[in-house]
Length: 179
Image (cartoon, rainbow, N blue to C red; front, top):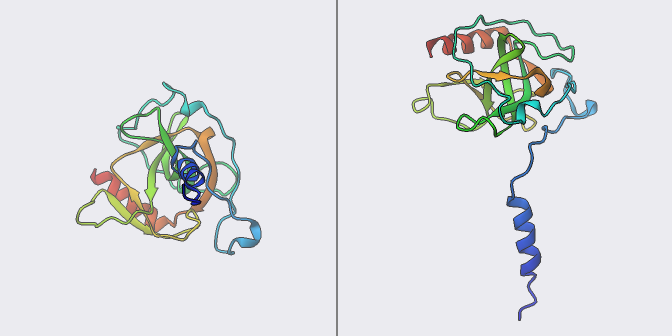
């Protein structure tokens, strides 16, 4: 028998690879933040959208895009926030991710999800590049998916990430209108 710790390595791998409950992203401490970044605010949290049957489905109608950001602890259109986003294939499952808020639908906020995964624009015309910002703790460039409008429960918003500049917001909305 070898003295190599196979059991401990196997157990560590199992712990690292097992599915975990979604957690809010790391919130930088005030002394770690540059003056250009917005101040993250912790917002109320609820597990309501995670329960089966709570999410009414993606938004498919026309909407009025609104740009009205206020860094005041409330999620507003024009801001990028972190929230629970249901998977497209199964709305009972999802994960925390950054979302650009673009409007409202009754009690729901309307949003477009962001990703830092680089996509070739020729292959993914439904994504718009917006660069990097304080919503990504690693400073990676992000893209916004413009062909899926998700409903965001205001109580599922974890924190404010940033205000998207008006010019970029308008570019994203123009791309959304094409879809």
